[in-house]
Length: 62
Image 1 (tube, rainbow, N blue to C red):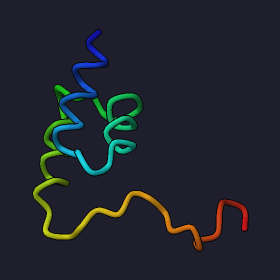
Image 2 (image 1 turned 45 degrees about the horizontal axis):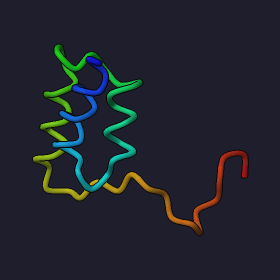
Image 3 (image 1 turned 135 degrees about the vertical axis):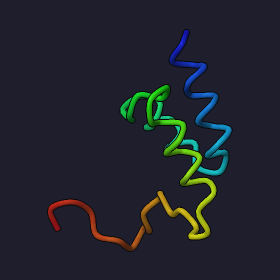
């Protein structure tokens, strides 16, 4: 159940990129130590975050 809470918190930071919120909750750094600080820093950045690759971008191994 704690995983869902963590995912929900990350989703609050990354509401437009739910895949990033999912990845941060599942495979990211410990949320209580550095994860939430990292998410806040990414959210507050002036540079837009583009987490979804372009369809024209070549895949791995190309």
